[in-house]
Image (cartoon, rainbow, N blue to C red; front, side, top):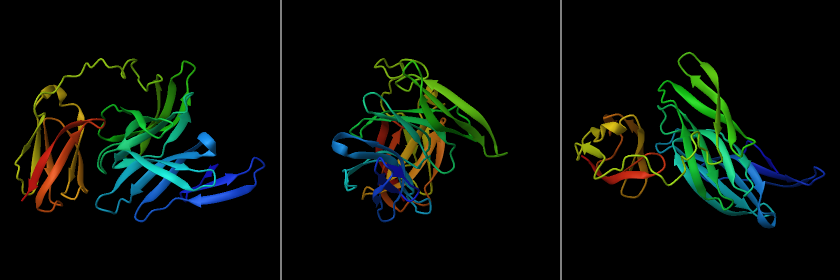
Amino acid sequence: MILNDNSGIIKLSKEGQFIWRKEVEQKIFGYNLRYCKEISNGNIQILGGKFKPFFLDDAQTWVCVINFDASGKIKSEKLIINTFDLFEFNCVNDINNCTICASAIQYRDTSSARGYLFKISSRGDSIWSREFTHGWKDRDEVFRNITYASDGGYYLTGYNWVQGDNSSKAWVVKVDSNGCVVAGCNTAVNVEKEVYGSLFQLFPNPAVDYLSIYLNDEDLQYRSYILKCYNQNGKQVLTREISGRKSDIDLGNLTSGMHFYQISDGSKLIQNGKLVKM
């Protein structure tokens, strides 16, 4: 199988003879196919990015898992990870036919990218994801490749890119089979503080042009969270990264009326509720 830059897939015989060619397309969406493997009964599973372009108000990207039959007909498409932007990724397969991919994730157009590692089952379901960052505000941290380590883990390679002076440094990270730099990050033992009540206070609500989000626990002020707002039709209309004890959000592009918000840490929902724009 060959993936090309036009969201296409080409099948050749073992002698290199052309068999068929298919393209994946959908109105207002773009596709970037990155990884292909054969699964049961000659069917094909492809991982890639599905995105709404940056010039649209609700620009966003998903990791998509597309299953084809042996003739190239699309059988199913599943969207499993959603963010503002996900960089191109490279993948490997493990002994259970799960796929592990190295990339970088960006939560909004003004935030720095973070190294990103995710694992997908043979059925196309998300198993886990990991983020890697030093917390720098002025540089992107990107993984470009992944390879096996002899102990069952993985080596991730990439770069740190400083946009101010266009300089970069190589970046190599070693993780175990669960994507952990420190063994045990996937266990059920939770060493994080448990949150009681509302972790965030939104004020004012109703709001006019600006909204302030206050973090109620100073021990968590160095973490980053994602705010997403939806209108009453379920359309995502705002995405912002928030951190520190106070974050000010510009609501100028939101229409008046009731909206629904969600605050997550990138992997789980922390808080949700209603937000009224006057």
